[in-house]
Image (cartoon, rainbow, N blue to C red; front, side):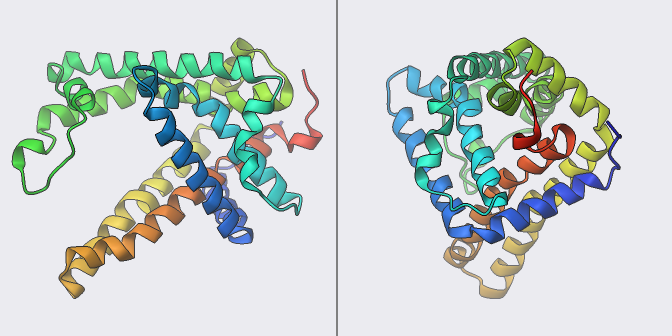
Amino acid sequence: MMKLNSSSGWLWIRDGFQLFRQQPVEMLALFFAYMFLTMGIGLIPVLGQLMPLILVPTFSMSFMQACRQIEAGQRVHPNVLLTGFRSPALPRLLMLGLLYLLAAMVAIGTSALVDGGAFWDFLTSQKPINPQDPKSMPDTAMFWGMLCSAVVYLPALMAFWFAAPLIAWQNMGVGKAVFYSFFAVRREGRAFTVYGLAWLVLGVLLPMILSLMVAIIVGKAIAVVVIMMPVSLALTVVMYCSFYPPYTHVFGKPDQASPE
């Protein structure tokens, strides 16, 4: 398999925009269905705090399948959200979800070595950030704790990136899928670096600049919310769509990939 160029990272994002543009209403409906279902699960005592993370691989197959259908010229319906739950690979997807949870807990727990537990306390307290209340804003120690967590979680992110579709579409076991995913991302490291930096600009810096411009021009906080909310939603769904092109570029299209 030929190694991809670093520019492939930007092409993945471009392809994500193209997929979204073909069926924007359907993809937004799928995203809202996912959010409402996740919020409903979150109401379950105790397990509701853990299940959304455990179900990430299962739900991720909903968006992968939706992109696959768009590419094939098929209409996306909200019942695509149940794709992972209907898959014979569901037990393995749930096992992968448990690994997600474990990796996240290890990464967040490690941050305590840097910030004395500030990041962990912030996440478990579930207190909203209030810009007018300095006490609610993250401090410098928490920033370093978050950075530490991100660095620790990076190898797990590499191992999980392709794991769900490899399990569902290529019938791999959890261990094999995680192994293949890690080394595939490592092999295409330059492309993924460009991909990550591009999303940092598009998903974080650009909305911040637009928000600041709207605030300066209009001068009302409600205007910032009204204008930026649709932009943020669209970019989020485009990001979900952009997860599909890397898989097809590295492992081939699902209908061309033979189970191993």
